[in-house]
Image (tube, rainbow, N blue to C red; front, side, top):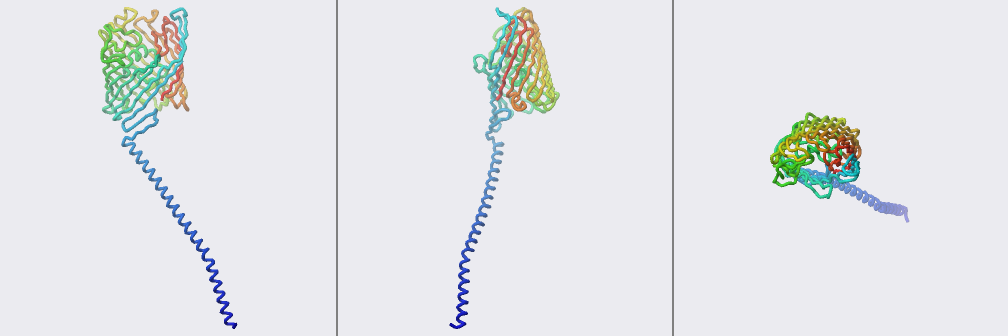
Length: 460
């Protein structure tokens, strides 16, 4: 073979080997490129997916916002807890309330009737188990309240409140139905917002315990509007203690109303009652109880009320004046005077004085102080003066009370909704009548009666 042929063969072999190497490398580079393409595609898909998720979240939030706005404006139903459970739909609002008060009472009396002379009674009772439905209907200006209580003995339900109130302006309206006679402030307080275990002997004897609930219609001015310092309610009713009766009135002529305790049911022909309150300073919301609990400012309210109930040839006029003062540092003061005058033969009683005019009166003052958010202490003095001797030639009676409230929850956060109350009561002249609702048995010839009461309250 010649030299030129050898050179040509060598060049051809070199070119062949280069092509083969190039062919061997090319598939590997292609696979890398394909892998990079797939990675780029995955990254693109991931970015798109994240964008879709973000868009979806934004749409959900926007839809939820629209639905909440629609709920607020178009009357969607809402249920929850706001100072009690409630169900709301537009201007309709229903709030169920259950008030449970469980008591232990120890009553010591000197010189009771019978062979024992001194006696001690002790035991437990469900003092109150109240069920209520309150709220608004059709418009926020139309409010209602329906409430029942279980009798201590027997447990049967008794209707307490059944009223509807309509405010046709910010300050004026009317109320119809069955409600507390609007006279004494102590009686108008909710049963679960009292200072002591129960109301004072003064109010039970001459105030709310005598007047009780009535059926009627009243004109309302102010309605505890925060911008109005004046509150007024006045109207016509069926007479003192006319709750749960029909339209027929007056059971006897002359009347058969005892000097002490509530009159017979619907013992009057009719009645007129009214109460006015003036707020010199403070917040009306703090006037709803006697405790200066969480007050942000000082409170001073002056009040007066009157009831005229007429039956047959007799009339009973009951009037009161009272004042309530509270401070923002936990001090609460309250005082009241109640006068009841009866003419004709409206009263039946143990002496001839009961056949003519009779004027009974009394006064009370109480104070309480918030030691801390969980504890407050209180004291109360009440005095009663009857025109007619009641027991053992006694016509004057005293009630002296000291006690303490403990509010459950962290730093007393439960307030009136869960609390324990303990008080000690001394009646140096006994009780003028048996008042078992407040733990007084009486019937001891006007001698000492000492009552220790303890109560657990749960309001839901």
